[in-house]
Amino acid sequence: MQEIELRPEEFALFRTYIYEKVGIALSDQKSTLIKGRLNKRLNQLNLQSFRDYYDYLLKDENAEELSLFVSAIATNVTSFFREGAQWKWLEQYLPQLIRMKSEKKIRIWSAGCSSGEEPYTILMFLEQHLHDFDTWDIKILATDISTKVLKHAIEGKYEAKGVETLPSEIIKCSFERNKNAQSYYQIKSSLREKVLFRKYNLVTDPFFFKNKFDMIFCRNVMIYFDDVTRHDLIGRFTTLLPKGSPLFLGSSESLTSHRESLKLLGSSIYQRL
Image 1 (tube, rainbow, N blue to C red):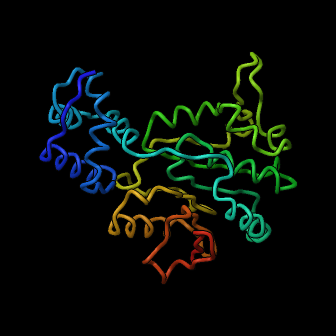
Image 2 (cartoon, rainbow, N blue to C red):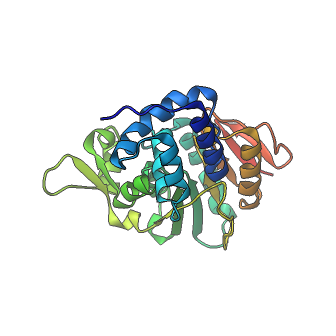
């Protein structure tokens, strides 16, 4: 494979491009990462320079290459029941949510859902803690900018090593073992049909939603954004949450603004005031 050098002026073009398109703020130190992770893609496309690749991105009318670019530079690390303290909090909050509902309908947004572990975990949790789970109208909107991870999420297939650490009761209730004895499990269809997976850009796509959400998860996404982009995104999330509803961020994320509309409850959980 040909090793293609990334010149400073080319990196500057990528830095401006990715910030304007998806809000990712690249520091000077990310130049080596860009070069290392994108060399393979340039070779696949038979391109001779990073400037050629930049021009290729500009011609990407359907944003498919942008999706691949973001997948290459962002880290899609996730797992089932990640951020354990948040699920413990949610167990205490669930009875309050039920009392607040005038009808048995729950709507949740998993923003930056990656390969699907988060929205499926939400459903597993509700299946375990709502005694009449099957009588509820539950829908989860799960969005990500990467078509690659969304394809995986829609299939709902996961390697055994990522599933078998879960409690046996959850595995039995929520998964189907591959009948061909291959080493993966698949989320059962009755859960998969409750999730609507969509490609969505949190920075540039419009926040036009028919209804508000009972809770929003946006975990380990804003670590790539600068303060201006975070402030804007949190403000838009707030408009989609009824009073008293929670917003879940990643454990390494915190808010320094919107204190008049969001209250910290602990474990990167914020409540709409």
